[in-house]
Length: 255
Ligand code: PGA
Image: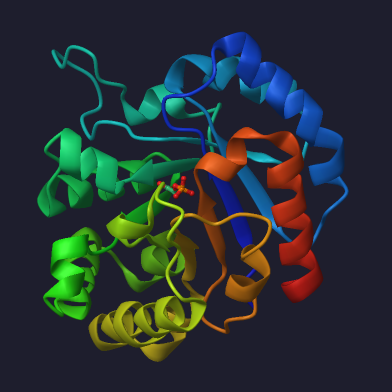
């Protein structure tokens, strides 16, 4: 049985003070929900303060990115070892990183290896953009991104990580994918590729989230889909009441 996981991707929002206030507002309500894992992913600078505010809580902490090297002359970057002790998760290959910061499939793969080597669980983002979607390339693009991100990993490593299927056209637009369409891509394309590369047990073990304009009103429909194990939530994760409500609904549907 895959435990559902709802992660809040705060992106470039919240000062350190605001970040701490937000988790303080959510902590008790999230701690009361045992059947769904909840994770918050603040900006780097707020991670230690948020982790402190969540000490003893069941709410996980994730980073939004990291570099693959252990250390060195990489101005502006954060190494995997720097996240150790503060984070359990790290979002890798988010479409905004691919789109605005030149991240490639190969780079994402290096980061996945580095994260796992440092005991961090990657949340690997994949998804087609609007042009690819309209051209009927969704399946090919998602498959390519999954195969590239997982290159060189063992089955046990793949089984331990999280994948987020995030159609780029659905992110921050208010236009979520149809739950059944997202379920098809996740079941057929993402789990299908993993079953081919590894085996069916690994494909069934990996947790796959949907992301893109999820909110309290639509999360229930996504959670009803058999291949969707939760959500990577952007905008709706910035308000305590919304995020808590989404985790609560996920627990009602799937907990
Ligand atoms: P959104 O963002 O929920 O604001 O669409 C999702 C994401 O980018 O992870």
